[in-house]
Every structure is written in C-alpha cells, then in structure tokens.
Image (tube, rainbow, N blue to C red):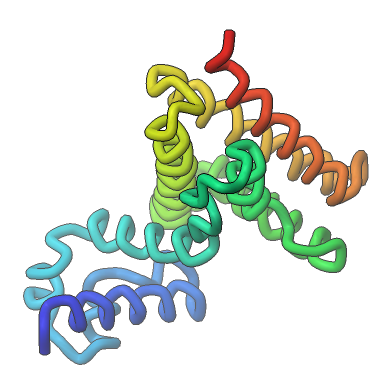
Length: 197
C-alpha cells in the first residue's frame, strides 16, 4: 500500500476510534490494531502519539473549516475572512444549542485537571490547528497586501478570542447567531483596516 494511503487509513481509524470511544481510545496500539498493522508499523508513519494526534486534529479542523473563497481576490478581503471565520460558529439557528453545549463540554474537559492528558491534549491540538487555519487565511490576505505580516499573530489572537467569546454569548442567549455573524464580519473588517493606520 502506498505511504499516503496507509497514512490516510491510520488517520481515519484514529478518528473513528476517538468518535466512538473518546479521545483516550485512539492510542497507537488501538489504532494499529484497528487498521490491522503492528504498532511499530504505525510508528513508521507517526513516530509518536503526539504526531498521530496532530494529524487527526489537522484533519478534523481542516475538513470543518475549508478555505472557501479566501483566495478569490475578486471579492472584498474582509468578506472572505469573515466567511472563513464564521465557520467557527454554529452553522444554523437550529444547531446553536447543540454546538454551544459541545463547545462548553470541550472547554470544561480542557480545564478539568481530572480529565487526564488525552482529552486535554486533543483539545489543545484542535485549538492549535484552528489558530493555524486563521493564520493561513490571514497570510493569504497579507500576500495580497491587506494586512501587515507583523500584525498576523495579534489578529489571530483577537479573532480566535472573539469567536470564543461569541460562543459564550450564544450559549447565554445574549445574542442571536445572525448578530454573532455580524460581529465576526465587523471584526474581520476592523482587523484588515489596521493596515491603513
């Protein structure tokens, strides 16, 4: 089997195990057994548990937050950035409660010292990959001259923190999903205006 196919098979098996039995279940041994290979063979593709976890996190976040139209320079840059950032919010009014509940549960696991390293590490990886997605989108816009590269880390932090805060406000019913999307659009415009100041 080609390397890329085996890698994909391993990542998919890890995702399936984590979804079925929780993040702690996706150990190197369990994933190897699920794929039908030895742990040493799996380690050829992913030398450490952390490498495997990062690949899983990248797959989950990348599939949930595609680049959409970020590279379409015929559209206004703030609209392209907002479109990408809005993917971090619930997709519909009907899903707000379920998505916010899942998000709160994840944050609680991340902050709970009793949860152990497995869930906390996975959530930390997912968060890091999410930050990487935002960085990549802003880099595209920096390459087009819409934001200074030096401002990207600050913009990533601000955009990410704002989405987290909006999730709390959605959960507390302090604003609607449409209002949250308007805030993201406004913030995306504001972040890109910093180039002009």
